[in-house]
Length: 455
Length: 177
Image (cartoon, each protein chain N blue to C red):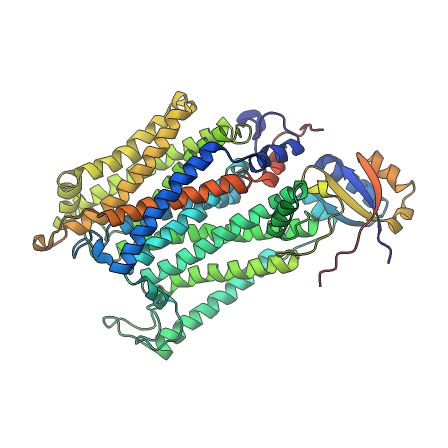
């Protein structure tokens, strides 16, 4: 039960239901702000560079990347895991907090889900490109064919990954979209221009808000929520098994599935924090995304950061305790010290140490610092994936096959391109879709307060 | 066909819920209730139950069985492959893919069920008695013919129960199938 006396109101400013609709829809009805156009322009440029890099990759092949015989997985897989991790935020917020009946999720889930959809889309691009001949990507679809092995290998984590990510994209897209249907109806019924009424009317699927619809709507939310909670754990566990079932030192470890899932949620929450601070500032939504919301996310970040620190320590301890010389080499001479020292310590400092600053209430209240910490976590999580992918591959069992790795402009361009695509997706979301779930916020305005008054 | 309806407009969930109680005490059948967010008491009052979660469970159960059968058929019966001498019928390694594919199937089937049962899909012609119900009002719709059942006039009953507005309107019956 949400106790308003202790935790404060979920929506401040004594809003009426009508005001909630107006406040949240307002950004959609205003003229496009200048900053939006500027950032959109930059994002388009970034994505154009990305598309050019993709064109080079597809037309000339993976040889344009910096990957070699030893480091077969370069930036593409680092970025794939990074984006998928960020994509876990929507599920973490919408679904875990829905199942745990955390009412404070309502102001944040919409943006987190939007982010998930865009991030998973960006992530899916990398393994597709990594196939080399992307036009043969349909080989992975299981159907009777005449290519040789009649069916795909159902025992391979790489195939599981393909199915898991497709399912994840489908479920997060449908969860996000159906969450918006009642809000589209609100916009439709307020719209004055015919075009707007038609467009949002089409998007609203003929929603009226009758009990018949709400009953099934609640049913659908819980069914999708329940199964997506299982999926979010399995998606990143499967991503981690892509690594863990191999024999590469530093990868062949049972801690990988939980370590990856927690890491994904960590980076997802950090990205949500980044986005929420931006949204509430630019669109004046401080009454909906309150300080209490950001405070709650900060506390979750500290908690997950502690788990991350423990996971890092466990990996190092197990490498030493196992007595396996290759594991010891990888962790002690190739990460803690050695060629990749910077990346290892960047990971530890950004993910396990700096977030501890959030223990201080003073820092949690200073949104500039919180914003910077959230960015630092995302950088740290990128370094974590760099550590896993590159350090283990570059220096494995045979020193004769050791090879250094550095990305080419094509890999960097593809990554920058996905950053651009992500920004475009998020900006379009800012502009055309209510950033806060209107009906969900209305349903929790009374939370913990029976005397809620409105006119 | 009689399409005349009495529309009661309420400003808050509490007023709506208390009005539902009073209307039901008078044995008046409520045609439909429209709310800006899900109000459990209104859904209960309409006597509606959903077996959505049970249906989803059945979808999951049958999908999982079908997927396991498919994996067995493709990997063991139809085209067994030799992966380093490992058994073709590798049940443990079928588990993960079964879970994920089951989730995939349940999602698609649940979305279809939702669309059919809630009767919403792109471009559907809808009937919305009072458009304010998607913004800030709670709307109760009652057939005109039911009004005679009340001891006092229905308008007065709804007003006394807290309705901010009561009016009569012709509302077409939604005809979707």
